[in-house]
Image 1 (cartoon, rainbow, N blue to C red):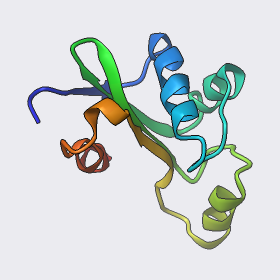
Image 2 (tube, one colour; image 1 turned 60 degrees about the vertical axis):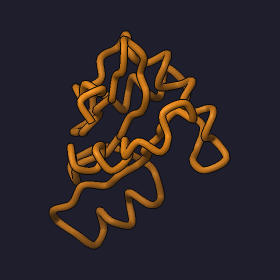
Image 3 (cartoon, one colour; image 1 turned 60 degrees about the horizontal axis):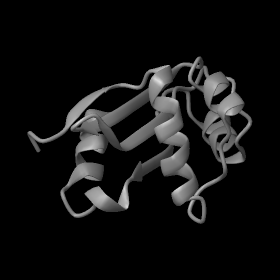
Image 4 (tube, helix red, strand yellow; image 1 turned 90 degrees about the vertical axis):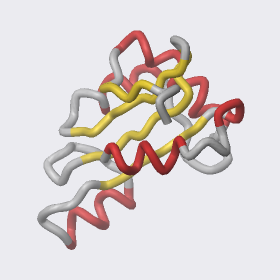
Amino acid sequence: MAEFLFRDAVQSDFSAVLTLNEASVRFLSSLDLAKLTRLSKEPVFFRVAVSAATVAGFLLAFLPEAIYDSPNFLWFKARYDNFAYIDRIVVSDAFRGRGLATSLYAEL
């Protein structure tokens, strides 16, 4: 997995993250820049996998103290004091089959 650099997402990654998200929108909810910017300021685990300056994938997860209105997140928040809610994990089609999602989960 040496071909990937894992790091915290920064604002300059947001365009690539939104593009990846939209390519997988049939599996998860749509996301726009305003919402992504707001969510990135919450207690969050937001990591990207980068290969040759290309964002190959990302994982966005929230901690219990996040202010997030997702029904699924709220379900966990009502039942558990300590958890990490994985809101979305996306890997570019071009990088699938290389264990990238598994590595992003391991990063969490």
